[in-house]
Amino acid sequence: MEQPQMQSRPTSNEMSFGDWFLTIFLAAIPLVGIVLLFVWAFGSTTNPCKANWAKANLAWAAIAIVIYLIIFVIILGIGLGTASSY
Image 1 (cartoon, rainbow, N blue to C red):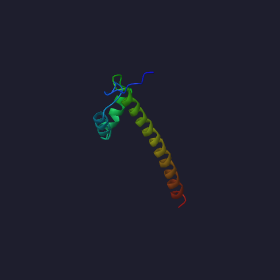
Image 2: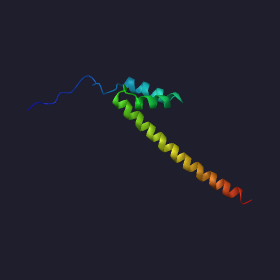
Image 3: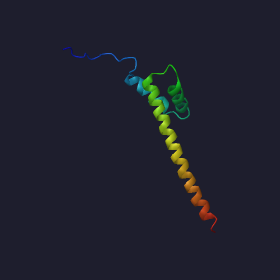
Image 4: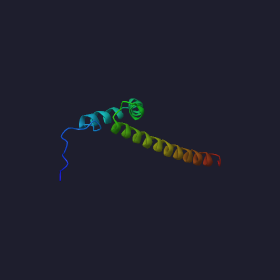
């Protein structure tokens, strides 16, 4: 029975530590990061691992925006409700 051999080199779908370090650094830059997330998520030449990571980040950003909008509407409604009672 043959034992599966470990690969010593990363395959084409794997990203190195340096790749991830640069990716996360660039994504953290305001405005530039958002643009890059869209480029990485929907670009045809992007590494599939990076594309999935970018799509997940965009999904979390969309969820956060929806939650912030709901909280803003609730606080605005409470504020307008108490202001009109004076």
